[in-house]
Image 1: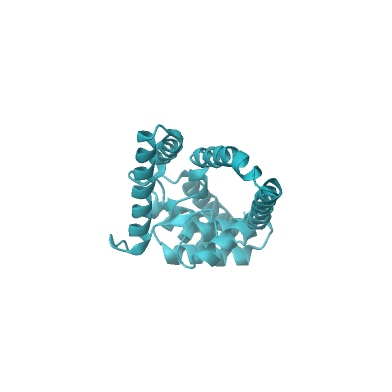
Image 2: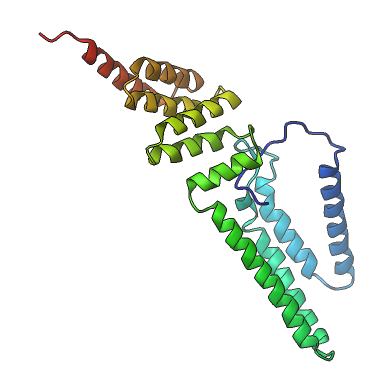
Length: 236
């Protein structure tokens, strides 16, 4: 159930199982790595250290963005885990193949894991097929939690010319967090395209209130004023 973006939890309680169990797991892996060092085996310690060091910048000690985590955070750290898995197969293979039909059984197990991973990859590709499927999946997984998902889904609808559906998504993003600039900006542009200049101006004003340095909002509000008053001007 991988999701492109994971929102910050609404409530954080130190003694929740979702924090305690991973903490215990980290301690066990670290303890096991240190124990293996004493026995002259540095492989787990090396892979685990690589994982922790490369994951450190995105652990949230210094929060960047509105997300708690993202799948992309593990791309580089996971290299250590897969190197460790490959080394494990390499070391176990001679022992397994020494048994009768051991090579066949080991090959079937590895093949089954490979097929399973391929199936998961195909499933994940359906999520990433396009912007509409991607952000719809995020909204389905975390309903009412991620305003940027609604904003991006609205943009996907706008590209298809489905402006009414896009505007509905921008309204949902605003309902979740009224202090964001982009939903107001995008909503204003759709009003502008429909010739509803007063509503467009009102949306741009809210975008500027959310972000006073929103140059695009100032520019588009000026365009809305221009077309509004040109339309109302009495010809000479």
